[in-house]
Each structure stands twice: as structure tokens, then as C-alpha cells.
Length: 474
Image (cartoon, one colour):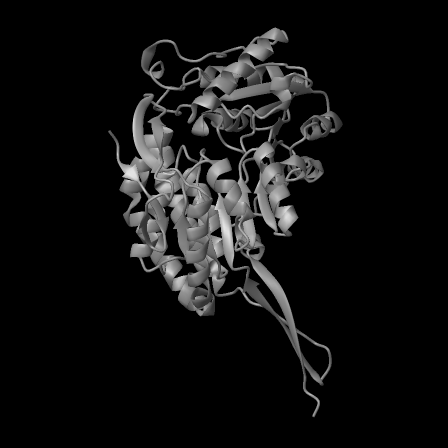
């Protein structure tokens, strides 16, 4: 039997108010894992109370003082990397290389926001010699962060670091499938000097713990990463309360390849979209749009590469049973619609992948844009390809989606690459493999959500602007 994990409230473990616990499963083996506390509205209430009590003292500290604490939290993540990687692996089945990268980026979030925090301030406004007018950037108070199961630690830190930097206190509600790394993070941050009550973690399901947290009158801002359906539900709760939100809701992102591009690098980018986290990434560029004259050659290169990928070594399993079944359902639906994959299209029934929730890397080539598998976010190691005739059709196909999170463009003509990037409806576009990192703002257009994470923009998401004007006249 695995370990039983409590909530983390007020700087210490807290048993669930209702006394219930939820099981977890190792998706790479389907064996039982640890248990987590089954949270409820009562647990959310305790956590919000602890956050509300701790927040004023934190907000009163100078930016430099808060930055010092965040730097220490980053150090704790780095020194606790082994523990964080192991608890994350146990509930996600991820490869060691991916886990190491995610833990490193988690520490980077805290270091980045600790650094830019010291330049986070308001401005003075010239209204004439008789006035002193200025703005302040003030925290909201208590922020609820509801995070998903695909990148648990990384996406928790992506929200928590800027929110804490801006002077807020937090209650995090991680997915019930992947909660333990967030609990571990809260403990490590506390040991590094983050004051008790500033980072609380309530575990449990969305309906039982997440929705009551978003609806709690003490919560003044909500950030959520997950499905469109759940995002709409939480946005409705927040709208009723007139509480602002950051929503990151996924995508069906295009990877546009022109015939004059460096196709070897473009193929590697397409393969990465399938392999990284087995495609369970909101920003995965899983619609491969290729200029017609190069389409077949690019598809052949992609197929050859994905067929070399090894389960458990180059990519991990589907993290939840529901997601495993959903991907298989997409395959069955595509078959009914007459789409036949060039490679893959099933789970592993033999070899090292058969014992877990591993899906064979899959490519559907030359699909029609109206197919469900070409329009809906599969969230698995599945790539669809479509040929295009010219630049205009490339842009039209890229934008023929309800989503608008990210995109990628590959072109031997850099000017054309930038021109196409500016015409694609997406919040983040890479041209010829342009770097995107902690410093670059991230968020969606259309059904991919609103608000921005990463970059200095995320720090502004968690601060309110107040204007103060003093008359200097006697």
C-alpha cells in the first residue's frame, strides 16, 4: 500500500474534513499508487482562511524581501529535485529526461519572478505642479490556482511563482490524479522560508474541491488550466462573483512547413510534438500543414522517426485511464469516417508498452480538415497532416480551428515566416524553431482561453492597479 497524503494548510499537513481519501495509479504499470485526501468545501474554507490570514504580512514586505524568499524556494526545488521527480514519475509515468527538464523549469519560474519583482512598480503621472499622482500595483489577496494532470509541478509553479511575487497568498487545487508533487512543493517552499499559510494545497476532485474553492467569497482571483468544458464552468462561477480569471484551455495547434524550409528540423519538431509527454501538452503542434510539393517527403520522414520511438524511454503513457480511452475512441471514430493511420492507431498489446497506458505514436496523413480527429484536441501522441497549395491556404488552414494557443512556421524565407506568423490567430508563434521560455508570455486566442502566463505579463495578471493623487496646493 502506498503513502497516504494529507492536504497542506497553514504550513502543515491537514487531514480531510470528511475523512475520505482517493487512490492513484501508476500509469506506466497500472499498479496502485499513493492515496490523497479527498477535499471538500470545508477543506477549501480552511485553506482560504489560512491564506487570508497570511497574505497581509506578505504583501507588506518589500519586493526585495519577497524576492529573497522566492530565490530560496527555487533553491529548495533544485535541491529536492530527486524527490520531486520520483513523486511525479509515480503518478505520470514520465521519462527521466522530461522530469528533469520540468523540475528545472519549475525552479526557473521562481528565480525569474524573484528577479523581475524588484522592477515591478507603479509610475508617476504628471498632472501639473500642484499634484502628486502615482499608481501602485497591489495584490488581489487570495488566489485560487486549479492545475491539470499533464504537467503538474511545472504548471503549478507557472501560476504560483508570479502570484506570490505580486504579494498574493494561494490555495492550489491540483488534479486528483497527480497531486503529490504540488504537496511536496508546498512543504519544500515552507522549509525554505515561505511563511506558513501563503501556499496551501487542497487535493480532491474538481466538483468536490475545485468548484467550492472558485466559489469561495474569500478568493479574489482564479487561474485555471484544463479543458474547455471545465473552464466554462469555472468562468461562470467567477463571472457570477465578478472575479477575474486566467484561463488556459488547450489547443489544436498548427505546424506550418513550406517546401523551402529546413525540413529535417521541421520533421524533428513534428516528432517532438508527438513524443513530448506523449502529446499530452496543451501547446502541442499536432496539425502538420505542409506545402503540397513537400508533403509526402515530410510525412515519410515523420513516420520513419516516430516508429523509432520507444515506450517508457522516449515517451510516457497516457496519464489517466479516461484519457487513454478517449484517444482510443478517437481512433475508432476516425476509422468509421474512413481515415486510416499511416502508422500507429492503437494501444500496445505486446512488449514493454503493453503493461501500461501506452499509445502507439500515430500519424494520419492527408486528412480532410472536417474530420473530428483533425479538429478536436486529442491530447495524445497523434499527428494529422494536410497539404496546402500556397501561403494563403496555409494561413486559412492554420486558422481553421476553434483554438488559438500556439503555432509554428518553418520557411526558408524568413520574411514569409514572420508574415505568416503575424496572420495566424494564436498567442505564441515560433518561426524556424525560435526559442520560447519562461520569459515569453503564453496564452490563447479564441477557445484557448484568456489572460497570460509566463513573462512579465503574468506578474501583471496577479496585481491590481491603484491610482493615488495628492493635491500639493496649500
